[in-house]
Length: 95
Image (tube, rainbow, N blue to C red; front, top):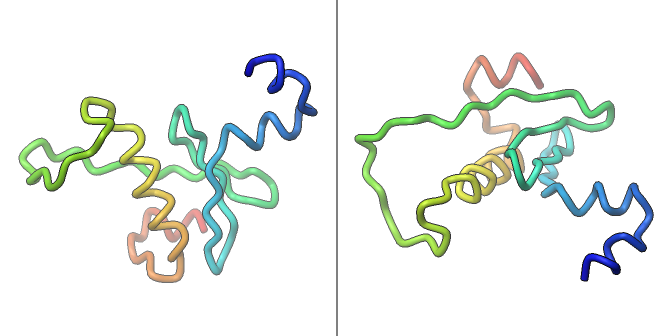
């Protein structure tokens, strides 16, 4: 499989490292390893820090329990796909 990935053009390999979220304001690229967000078209970094409340209730079973990053990436993607509904001033100032 690595040989097949290496055969891809460099731009295509970079695309495989990101999840895309298309909002009404922008399209966002979320890095699948770090969860960092880039806003198109200029790949401007967007800082969204997940809320870390250890007392928050945990609901449902996730198949990747113990690794929080997939849940962080999914929550960022869902929020950014509905970017006109974002009300947090610290996020809005970056859009």
